[in-house]
Amino acid sequence: MSAIYGLWLRELRRYVRSRAQIAASLGQPILYLVALGFGLGPVFQKAGQGNYVQFVAPGIIAMAVLFSSVFSGMGLLWDRQFGFLKETLVAPVPRINIMLGKVLGAATVAVIQGLLVAVVCFIAGFRVVDLRTLPVALLLLGLIACLFSSMGTAIGSVIENIQGFQLVMNFLVMPIFFLSGALYPLNNLPGVLGVVTSLDPLAYGVDGLRAALLGISHFGLAADFSVLVLVTVALLFAGSYLFSKIQV
Amino acid sequence: MIRVEKLVKKFGEFTAVDHISFEVGRGEIFAFLGPNGAGKTTTIKMLTTLLRPTGGTLEIDGLDPGAHSNEVRKRFGIVFQDPSLDGDMTAYENMELHGIFYHVPRKARIERIEQLLRLFELWERRHEQVKLFSGGMKRRLEIARGLLHTPKILFLDEPTLGLDPQTRNQLWTHVKHLNQTEGVTVFLTTHYMDEADRVAQRIAVIDHGKIVAQGSPQELKQQTGKDSLEEAFLSLTGSTIRDEAATSADQMRQFSKMWSNRR
Image 1 (spheres, chains in turn red, green):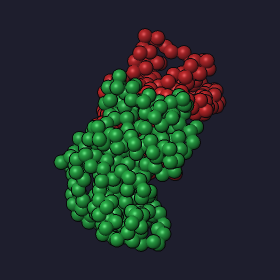
Image 2: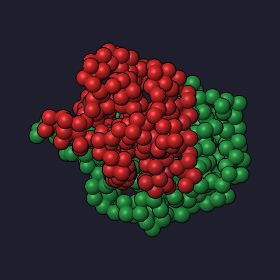
Image 3: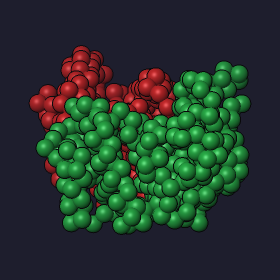
Image 4: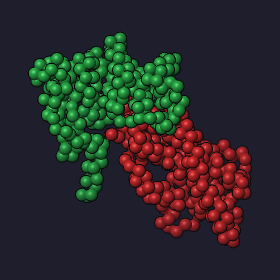
């Protein structure tokens, strides 16, 4: 138990100390919110879909959580580069606990990032429909963060160099974001895109957030929760298995 | 305490460790000597669950590191040859996390951290981030951290590399003390023959992945008919300079690259 806490605390300390990283990782979501939110707003409105900032804000918050989780999860790469990985590998701690500590730490950081972006969204004009559903939204944010931190840690266990990181960003993280429906509604998508979207775990996260914050949903909140929980648990175990296979 | 039989580790075509066998008794200080790239670190990595052997058997306190990784990990401590600190954390935080990993009770942890940081003269700078430390300070912190919990077996992989004589002296005095008072078994590698001569009760010399001699420092000198361990070592391993082979991880990476190109 205490090793989980120790590793969690480590992630938090590293986050608080890297102010540049905090600022940098806020830049991208804000750019999306401003450029797309206000840029596409009039078109969205004309199409009869209402306020685009209102629609896209949950997607942008999810995006911040996605990027931050995968990024911290893959911190394993840096641990490998700078050698700290060896210290965790020889520690007499069950691999699942190491995984949990890292994932919970990365997820906590990601949720904080998500909340910061939520504040920016609020400033940009985003309003929650029903304040009583905020705890549900927070729970969903936590789940999304755990899911993608697990994914990041699992990938970090397999990839050995920094170059691989770019590959993962371009061929995994960006598609996950763009296919999640963060930027557009999932209703009436053309065939293949509809199927691909339904395979994207973030789609359920964004949908759940919209359900909680705006009262609109494509899959239904129950389905969103089930998928997120199942995928998170699966990735946690996959991650700790892959972590246990690391050789240095 | 440590039993190794016909241990083999291959990286692709390259055999890093070639059918070596040795035993280290409980409470013994054992030095594993060899030129660069002889297979010392690879052997330590296999003993400490970081690498899986290609063949042969290993036993740590009667347990197989492959099958009972976590039980084995509870029994040893290690000071690595290359850096393994978290540069973003402070010296104190690095020590603290290590204590948590090894279940050192809170009270004992606080006492021992202070004692060790003072011993290696890092106490004054305990709240600084490790990335701001000099090479020697980092090395001292690695050692202090490795000594924080009292393991049954302590692995020291070239712990004194780049340290001044004062710090080396502190280290070996402390290690001998641990060995005598707590019965800690010590498995060390070093390039400084005087250190091995001073602390080790038994020595194995490895070269090109094979063990070429074993015995007490005295026995090795007698076997080779030399006066000093340094001369004995040179007569056993020859005087040609070895290039440091890439680390095993590098070799694996190289190997997997070759592999993926072929497909």
